[in-house]
Image (tube, rainbow over the protein chains, first blue to last red):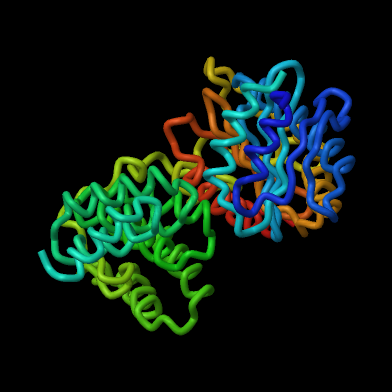
Length: 115
Length: 286
């Protein structure tokens, strides 16, 4: 199993995670995905890639190092993103009852192993 | 050792991955065995870092131990996981009250009351604090508003996180810690108020504001297309800083920035308070 698949497996095992994908941040394309029905992978990739890029530039403007984790909270769930090496971003779409603490830990760990 | 504690200890030993630690630590806390309660709560929290109940439990234990700053952090973490958690809102309200921050105490208690309008103790505490603010000669008592069964901590000094700083002016007047690290930005990336210093001390507000042009629209589009409703906040965790974005109005976004020693949950609470203050300020500017 590739490191990418291992990462997706780890994240999607967390309770409340509806799906996970690996995105190329610069062009917003899906590299790999494991999504439940109803989750639009292309939209998640494009929008999250763009948002993470913008937040990275925001952090840089504030003199900060690049983000290790981003949490976009909506009223019915969240989008989580953990940038990894080689311009890749591990993204998860989670429901409102998801174990966010566990998802965060798994994603940061898994994103570091993407290649 | 009472029968219930013995039974819970046995259950936890048999099933270390169970949630029995919640009941066991609470039972120990109620008996005043705070060291043992802390140990059990810490073990449970390590196993379930995403469980709001575990943070809430730890906050009660720390509060009983007199570690008010630790209790604040733990309740803030509980709120990050469960923003409607009444016990954490009451706990933080109590800590603000102890620190002499009546406005912040009332703010949290009001939020708790919004969630649970039937909780008489919250209503009573709000009334007492409000009355005390008008006639401050006699300290208000609000023990009844504490999270269930929590006793007032013996320490009287406020948690260090709530130390007094010069009052902020502009959009963030009255917001604790609002004199720096908060920015209010319009949809075009222009700074409406606040200041932000980069890690080297240089003013970075305008540069950061420019990067945030249209971020609210982008976040709204992302959550809408993914079926997550409207967006509430964005937390950005950097190795050397924590940022939280919140929507102040439909056309403005609020950025709160703190160093990484401040837990993200607390930065989120600051952002919420600042966004509310900015909304009020914007109404007066219209």
